[in-house]
Image (cartoon, rainbow, N blue to C red; front, side, top):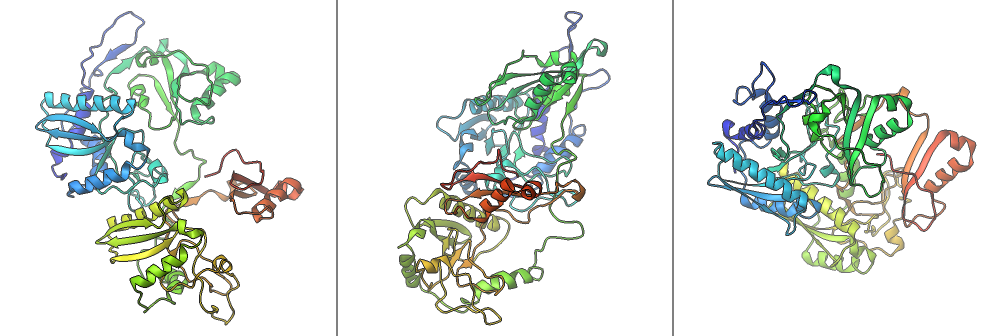
Length: 572
């Protein structure tokens, strides 16, 4: 599959115009009915490439830019499908096949969701209508995602024209979505309109299950002098969502009662009981002067239809003026990328880890003996062999059923290494052992001394457990380090975790607006004792007047046996 032709690559947006071109003639009907029109007087519908140029530039061109001129193999498509179906989105994925003008879809799940079936039926019908109207599609095979969010995450940070990074971090990134090696088409993706960029590389596909194209007019002097909102309560929405705030404002405030006509027409959230309001069709929305478009779980399909009325549409900002500003780099600085710029990081971190191992050779037998030694203790559940061959990366756990923590961490690391390959990094063919437990595993054979001759005081936990002195390097995500002595008794090599992102974004908030307190939000892990620092801070806030004045401390998750009062929700 190659995206080359300018005219061919724009046929998708012409399909949008086709989907909207259903002829609904303006009908007067009863004198008090809103008038529905196909075109506004003095205007005509854009249908040519020249008329659609601005739409292409601001939408389709931005999506296609990373993919133009590239070629993709069926194997790459297969690998992407294999990666994506590991989670929930498999129920919303289908392969679209176009051959000789015929269009069909093949769901990836044996029993796809009803939502998927309905949306795919509308999409296939819309594409077939395009064929019937004279559009000629090339023979194609592509993957289509009809879930309410994008699925592909850029391998590298995406910057807008002014150097800022998009603030709307994709949900798929939070789920460690893959950096797609082939294009994936989606109905919805995140987009920062202010920064003019997105971290999601999905290509937007016409949905066809909504028709945008009718204009609705109602005399302004007859409109109700209120703001109307009719919306659904989705299953994923929380109690503090915008829609429920608007309804509460109408219920409890005199001005809200005077100015609002807000209601939920469909409640899909089993956790919240709500009184449902009457349904108002789109044409009748024009009877109100003001229409509220409140943020939901994802992009609003209703918004486009509200904009086609002659009422004033009120839309809340995704990023209020009082929210922190997220940037990819600080003004006057740039991200360190070259070996010269990273020299200090190498010296203080990687060089110190590598020093005991440089110039030494290791045999497969030594690696086998080392693995045999390590699997005698609990950490066997957190060990994997990482294999890199010809740019391909895979992991082999040392136990049949590793804990979910080990699986998720190892998966993130393999994915991070693969993203590096996709970004142009070339790894040598390698075989090494990786430990994803929360401590190092290898103990130095001899006392380790810092530059001033002092011995590192941070005695490794693995030494207390009679940990082994490793004959071959073992990579770990955590090891102990005496910052004062600048040395460690653990000889593990630190491995990037890829589970957490550090440095991709900087967050700024005006100092004068900051709360004059010290914030702590933390989890209580299973191994923590009742005299740990976190509980001391929480107790100081609870029992001391100065602690109450200066602290905002709380435990958000408790995995220990201690009974604790948890905060309502963590803070991002």
